[in-house]
Length: 343
Image (cartoon, rainbow, N blue to C red; front, side):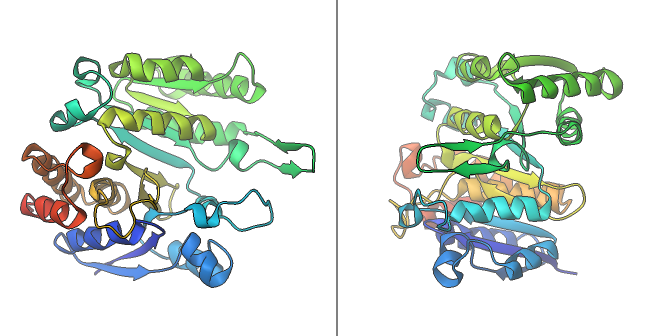
């Protein structure tokens, strides 16, 4: 029976990297793809970034594959105007996607593409576990002509849920990142994580690190980290910083998971409207996001590993897109990965 995948190409380079990803997946198994408008493309057609019909389709899928959303066309400071990012928040809330996983493992072939020295990043293999449906992004918001506010709120249940995910994913150590010297939500976060650790995961090492210190350590000693656990906004910032360890944000995939419903899988990079339509977008993060979908969303471990090995093999053979210092376009990059794909 075919696995039902909802595809959301979105905006900018989104459609350009979605098409070769579906080509890749079709070589691996029996999938049924259903494409829908999302983000800015949905705003243009329907006036909102996420329609009820699309959300319903996502709820009934086996997995959701998203490419990219946003662009200057829809940028505005008007709080009443629809924004593409509202679609992302709506999907996360509507599907209960509370756990965002972002693996960061620089590949040896790209060590020299990183802005950090090879000796700093060599051997780095970390996972950022970000809470995705709470915190300041979802808190009450106010706006007047002269002031604005965004409420950051967390419950014990929300913190326990994401912490359990991080402890379960960790090999040996969890680094819980907060701002407990200033924020009350961070103090609760630290207390709840500590209690859960002692109660259920005493075999895993736990350390608490303030977010500013964590940001410095990510670029000074990235091998220090195994699994980073943090709340929504801190995770958003730190995971993008960590992406640069790989040499390009165009290399980083992500998975957003719920307790029992379909997950959503997307590259960390944005829609890159400045290069849209030129055929030069790097599809590798999208391919690796599909691998996360195969593994975490569909339970197809061997197929996921095959995609990851194909990407690594293509890079070892010299594949370099523009963001990695080369000149290979989207089509050539796809061909190179497909040539290395063995199932």
